[in-house]
Length: 415
Ligand code: FAD
Image 1 (cartoon, protein in one colour):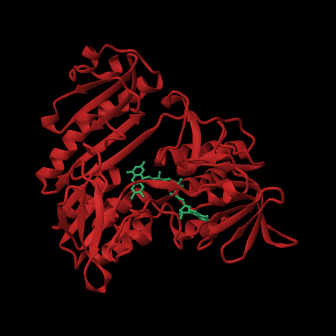
Image 2 (cartoon, protein in one colour):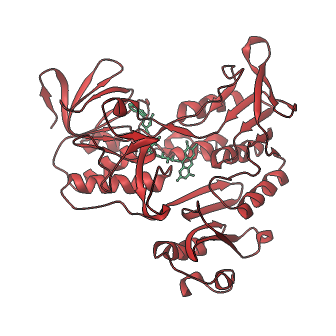
């Protein structure tokens, strides 16, 4: 049971800030472990926790309604004993006195605090960025705003050729919109995948009618009457007319209150192998947590994936239950575009060799990344078997000859 505390409305043994993937998963894992203390899941969105990846996929295209992307139905949370506190934004943390303050003035005390606030979508800070019809895509409100404007939209410009930009382009071109995707670098997915994957996806999108502009910087945005976006001007002088502009250029970790409270951090809050921050009794997990990752050569990184959110949540729940645990999970990720399922395992950044396994023209193949001869990552396109079997190669950091890896007739689990 939560207890009343002088000066604070309520105190919880575990207070989770951020009701997204990571936050919800801590609560669920504690429940599963029969944690005996009180748990509150506090978040600034109005919704109960939902599957964020669907926002750029089935939810955006209208194939799934909101009820179908909830992580758990409303009655589950009601019956669970976990206190959900939606519509609450934490603006300050008092680590010495163990309480947080929300934007509405309410305060909540905690025994342990789990900071799981994800990130805020980056905006384009250029002339015209405030016009109507310009959106980022991070939460349900963003997706609903985009969906509401689609019926009056013929032309869409998507800025950013990362996973989200490409998924949005795929979803919208399939609903009959004319889509142009603008990427500043010379290939899409440049930060996360090797060139064979980039070129394959560029060709797939172009084949479906997406106009992809590479090496193209957005210079300014122009509006028409009523302050609505009408075109985007590129640095090379090209002007792209549009009714809707969607910006997918990454996130900034949502860590300000915690960093202001003294937590060590830069790009994300720094955590140790148990996801503890530098502040007493405060953990940080998910997109906002900068951790040392053995699959990235022990570099301190943030991972933006459901896998990372869930696996870090599982570690924190164990630690809170007194069960020793450290985070060292194999990173994995997926992206759905058209009928293509991309599954990634490991971290390809820093690779020095790339092996293509299979024939890209069959639309079922894998790209394997090596560093110093060791397998560090795989990108598998419609190649579930490679993905499942390749996980072990990455986990065990195996040294395998490229000539073997490229032989698609030879299963990876035999290597
Ligand atoms: P979130 O799920 O973002 O949850 C954080 C929550 O905290 C949010 O509700 C936020 O509003 C809230 N919050 C922030 N600040 C405060 C505050 N001060 N007080 C209270 N609440 C606060 N990952 C994949 O693995 N595969 C995919 O295909 C994929 N597709 C994606 C598509 C889209 C459109 C997006 C946006 C993300 C996608 N991701 C995907 C990434 C994945 O959704 C994130 O990695 C995951 O949601 C991270 O979980 P999290 O709990 O750290 O953050």
